[in-house]
Image (tube, one colour):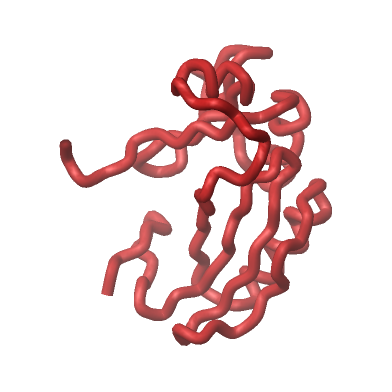
Length: 140
């Protein structure tokens, strides 16, 4: 298997609510999305999907305990002010602020929010991982 991830599917309880939340953050569903079933987002070299949480669990062969699954999604930005702006935007759209933006022990700046379906997102500046013109991190 090649060392890459091509798709991340987030299980959601209410697709319309999830679409409203991510739409408020500026995300636009890809035309290949299926209304009322699944939403796809082209996120620059990979795809993020929103799909019914129960269907996702059944399709994946796991029991959904309803709790956190041990995964945190991250979005890197270039400046600390952008971290704070995105956290505020997410909270205004319905997220819960998990951790306000602050300097980190590893020399960066980060904060976190939890989307309406319980998926945690970290928003971070990592000076060791500069972003290329497409917004993709380059491991230093």
